[in-house]
Length: 223
Image 1 (tube, rainbow, N blue to C red):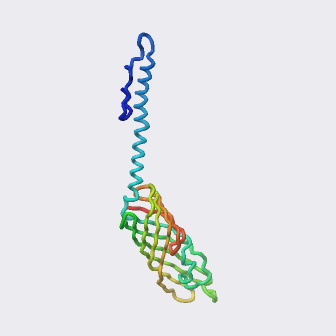
Image 2 (cartoon, one colour; image 1 turned 60 degrees about the vertical axis):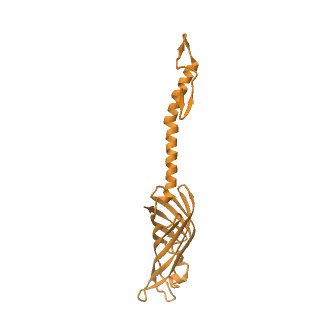
Image 3 (cartoon, helix red, strand yellow; image 1 turned 90 degrees about the vertical axis):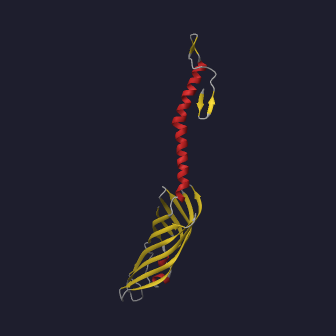
């Protein structure tokens, strides 16, 4: 009898290779089937089933295995250099180098994350007014963030992100004392994608508009 997992194949003959001085090919074929089937099950089928089961389990567990996440990211083209309100109508400012962002989020529902973020950026100009004065600006933003996940495909998650808070601008012109001004901070990213390469970490990228940048990318770690 040859065993294929749970399927039994009954061999019509005993495993005797020689009968009456002649080779019994039917018996030899039955013996080879039995031997080869065990090798295929042990070396190929069983490891493949284990691997597929493990990968499926990891893909399902990753998004739900973390309740708190910390992220570090870089944002390009923040709105502070583009909207005059944020740079006190100073002239000669180019596009800021970008932003550095730190975020901590907590899962409040299966697809909803809420948290806090800090954003840092700066810019400078050699001619902030008609008199030719120079100056530097530093921005510090603190926002409440919400992230809603609307698609899961294994390790890939698609989501939308929005934030609102305060932005503190620190102005340092060369013709007077420095001063601070507090304004409104915002970020609206309709599309974001995250790829989890383990149960506790992943990379992400977002596109939208606000104080964190038009494009933002970074790393998330969860626990």
